[in-house]
Length: 254
Image (cartoon, rainbow, N blue to C red; front, side, top):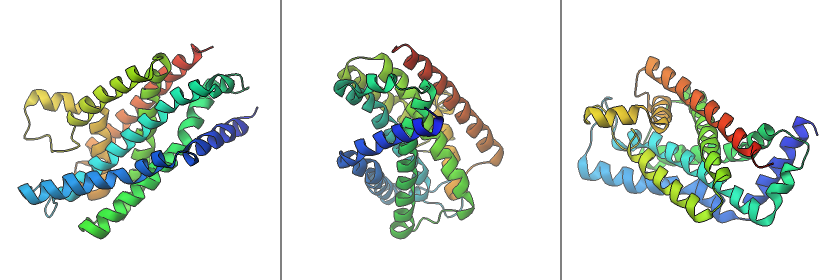
């Protein structure tokens, strides 16, 4: 089987899964808007928070955090599908196909990268139209790159655990713990500068912070270019390491 045929087969499978479970697809595409409206509008109205860029309100600041959160959630849902595939036997059938394990993992996330980009377009469009956020058009290529690299990285990271854990409830517990630790120990909800040094150190080592900072620079220009480049490189390294570990975990399946 050629690489193109392998990708096409897995991509078709992912599209069929999403087409038969529109609730997941709707959730991935539109739930970030709820966070943006509830947290962004609520905090902005309650605190009137001003941030380190002239004219930047909390709506604009939190937009990148919402995009990172959605990327994180799409990756978790995609990794969870391993349990669905195990239950109906398609997972073990796919492993008998003449394609590399790396191709299987790369193709599995491909459809969901399209979902992530579509979700970002919807969220940014609503932020622009409803909340008056003016994203930088020049930052669109960087925004797409951060979404693709980040979503893929988090999927491969979660895939390591989905492939090694046999019980669905245990995996859900692990993802819930990760959700709490990664999201709140990051720059997603608040700027890091006023926070204690220990918290800043943890947040700066968090891949969610790297992705959020890159997206924040891409959308509203907040941050320094040198720092953003370093964080994007770190995010690429995280994705590469997670991919390698995920492939090793998949090779143990047979």
